[in-house]
Length: 269
Image (cartoon, rainbow, N blue to C red; front, side):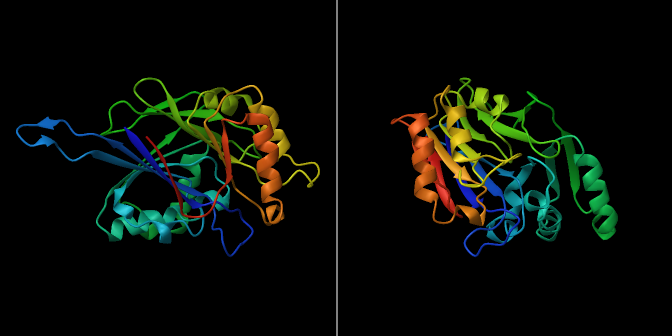
């Protein structure tokens, strides 16, 4: 089982030339079953999208492959391209999409269709509102589950973990949040944690978001294979190395810490 992660967008609501808004593409591969006499069939591949902010859709090579969209929360920089995705799937003759998100997702989507009523009924959309610790089994890929964890932000919000059939947490995506128990607990032992780190420590009184020192204190108590810092405001420019050093100091020498880049890919084997 392998997981390919593409960090489509690592930015925020403030425009930046090198970062679009939030979006992470995750491809789950599982080997096919033996097929005599030719050996293995083609691997089974499922594509998940986590968040869909402005600028994300044009970077998705095949929108028809996306059947599962997980929203961390409903701020514009995480959902601005959702209706564009829905229309693109319809135009490309792909007619189903499951959207998972926090409380309020159904009402938000209904209001969106009020504004774009000509899109009503174009594709079949299944909306599932999730709460803390809810789990989602992924169609077509046995052995993977997505678990939602409540986070701390300005409105209902979730982070997500991907768990394999052996119960191992392979990937955690925090969404927008202060460091919190839910993300800490699911990240303990995870292969990769993609955690927002919106501002350097020089920005005072940060709430609803994370700074390197705050993230480092959360990591003191847990073990993670790799930490990728994302959701980066322009304030981060010039402080990247310092931010990485602060986080690395807390998570230990065996933990790789990096600043995310748009369209960067990471593979978990």
